[in-house]
Length: 423
Image 1 (cartoon, rainbow, N blue to C red):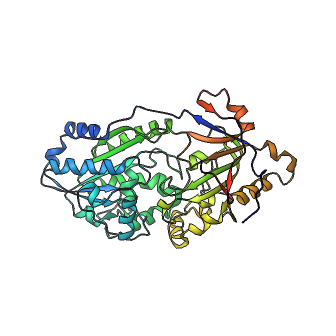
Image 2: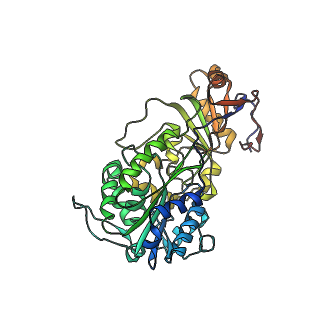
Image 3: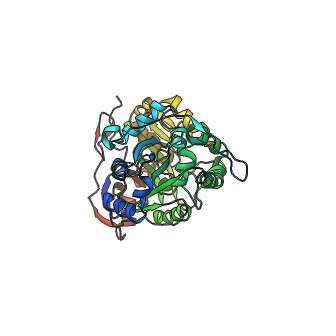
């Protein structure tokens, strides 16, 4: 154990902030209303309906899935859940069921069978000759429902980012479809993915595309149900609203950003690149507005099952994080994406205290006397931005900010066996 170093961090204030907020919706009421307005009962009657569930971190996804299952059953249909998660779960059917279970989606919780396979069919090609890949269970069903959150992507920006189209092209394309699109890097995601998804709509009976937007508190702020004819335009409109509700760090100019935990259920990149202001994707220019000089990450979440995709976005990490990494799984996820920089390992140190100390030594190696005025922000994760800790230099900058609710007096952080007290 490393001897305590009381001056590792300057005194920090715990601040509470007001994040972008919308009007929370009642999920069951919203879905039931849309079901009636769209006349979906008659369309689901007697049909085997595949319900694609996937994206990690979607608020109340198990509740959404269970409600859709109930609506299909009440309409006289026969629902089953399929994992729409590309190559996640180690690119195995059992692993994908484990991912859904981690989201609270099981046969018991939703009330219908779960059918997982990595087998795909190729029902056709796009006008450009690009192959279409589709989950075999979905291809054999009579109808399809997909449910996902619409949000800003962590790899690129464009008219369509993370949402229903991505779920169709990549999530239901399983490992083969995901690998085909990802081999073209950002071009595959920004340009090919929407066209492949649009082409797939000609080969499936899309009963409904259920889209959710979340506000800065990760509450469902809006639900929309689309058909094949209005899904593409509808998702594009919802993406803009999602961008408006995206939270930010309290300031742009930061010396050291300490992130308590990262994981795939927090962000596709482990930590949201839109929050930290780093892309590290070949062919994509880095953001210019945000300036985070160094990032230290302390832990990997249990829910990520060892997947440390995005760890290369950090500069420093702890041994406890390193020891949790499933290297074969992480490699499996990083390589197909083409974002190899995100798979590079940061410097590893024994505990939180040494990790942060070495980050600060690096930042102030030329002028160690300035370390006491370091601009530090500490967050639980990039999903947890309501309550954060900041150093005095940053608190001074934001004390009159309209989103600041409260701030404690600065105090020295507490350490236990080299670990920071949880935020």
